[in-house]
Image 1 (cartoon, rainbow, N blue to C red):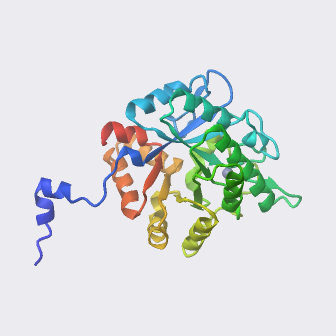
Image 2 (tube, protein in one colour):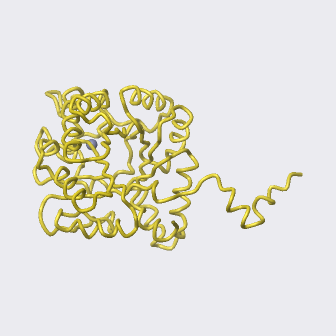
Image 3 (cartoon, helix red, strand yellow):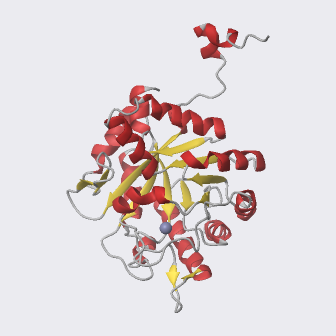
Length: 319
Ligand SMILES: [Zn+2]
């Protein structure tokens, strides 16, 4: 009989042979900025998460600086929405202004920007709607590419397209290269599933589709076989990192991708996952160590970086 407990019995040995650990350099914090003044508002589903107008944003930045959490992913909530999502690629759009403000505030911030149209279109879809009421792929890719260029020009460190149009990575890579941003990396939301776990985010980002759903462009969660093909295609088009979203019930996808490609993998621990864990802890049904254990689960499955609303709590309590 092999005595496996010899690995577990001594605290020193057990703690020093752990295959997976977590450090704060691996965490990316979502930050929501909203057009307007003196705004710091939460939503019912995510009572601890705020949208900030730029004049109030320093409150959040100071907290992140104190904790040493410098990697952020930025989401914008514009004042005006239209059919073409024009505020998304406006030089004076909310995200473009936020990038410049944050970089001026503290240049240590590493800013990843979410690239999509859904927060900026009046219909709430991730692309342009054609005469048949369908999201038009190639025209959307053109606009998505323009958003990426405008974020790069404002000073973003990495762009992360989340729209799920075909060919968007090639479109973005080309426009960035043509304009001198050859070293700006692209994080593709490659494996973004059409998930019910996004509910609370849609409230905070005000990006709920006004008709239909996103199942014509986001991945179908019944499937896993084509995940590797999708990731490989994005990498061939120029993606430097790939994402799996959501994270908690998609660890099979993370593991699958980890064995299929060699680029860094990012998981997005999404709003619904955050809400469920937070409510469970608040009600006393589970203890708060479940947060840390969940992050280690992501690492064990093969994730390199984690986007999570728990980043501050993780640093405060475990790291
Ligand atoms: Zn979108």
